[in-house]
Length: 279
Image (tube, rainbow, N blue to C red; front, side, top):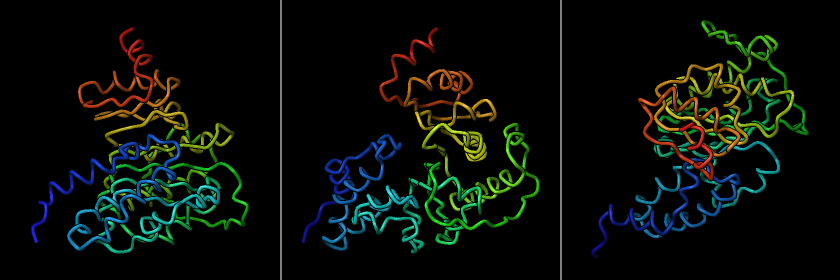
């Protein structure tokens, strides 16, 4: 039986199922939009072996891990196979390109996200974008406190002065393990759920994770406005600006990286940004 060429079928799938807002985590309800998208892609995997081979990389390009009860309960059944801790086949792990992670900040400070690294012992080498949301609420369950190894030759940062040595050690360990799990990310965004007394803890994690990346987000939940002054970010290839409140920091980053930037992504902020960059 004649069948459409692979490239043609790929183009049809991408036109019919278009949720590009997932690519840059533009939708604040990522888990909800991801669920809608997965419900449209998942049936393609069951049509035939040929369709499965083409649609499988589409389905697994987005993955998430969530330990927060409320958002976890909103994850739709269609997404279950693409939860990060369920992707155990190396071939499927290589298909993952974008990862959304929602964890408790208290677990970072208690044990360096031990639960995450116990659940997932894998290396996702092709992940390009990582979104880390640190929930500052109480977990509601008992958190195990545990010492983590102290890393040698870790650069001291200004933000370290405002944190305890134990917090610095555990954040460094968390970032080290995340960077091992996702070794080739070009963009990492660290966001919080509020601006609280834990801000400097999140800024510390942000500083460590955005080092040597090619792209950054500037959005309402992002701590890049605080971290940018502490990180010598250079050689950026793209910047995404989601909030007018972040435009001034984004302007400074654009000026600092004007020789290498190839893309600036705006979400309803372009006019305000243009007025500042041309001032």
